[in-house]
Amino acid sequence: MRVTVKLFATFRDGRFKVEERDLPEGSRVLDVLQSLNITPEEVAICLVNGRDVNEQHVIKNGDTIALFPPVGGG
Image 1 (tube, one colour):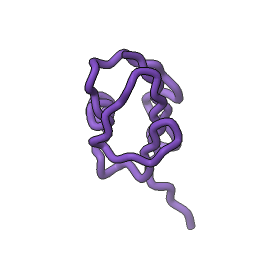
Image 2 (spheres, one colour):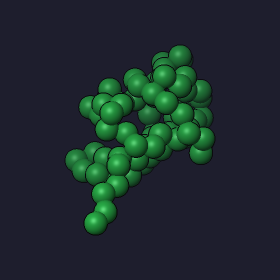
Image 3 (cartoon, helix red, strand yellow):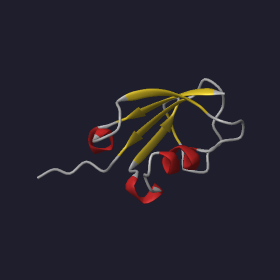
Image 4 (cartoon, helix red, strand yellow):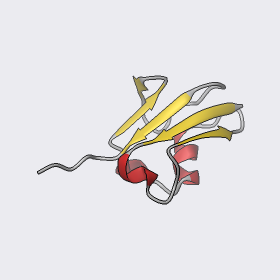
């Protein structure tokens, strides 16, 4: 299946902004995180098709996954 992965803020450092990926059926958000060397604890917001999900969410063909790290301010 094919999904779109969008990274934001510091997750883009040394990675990409938007990328399409081929994943096996039954893949979870956690599988995408592991392939990017991102731990679930590093993710502040995870959206699939604009809906808030956790790392155990099962991805479907055509989904768009958006990953946001915590944003610092001061």
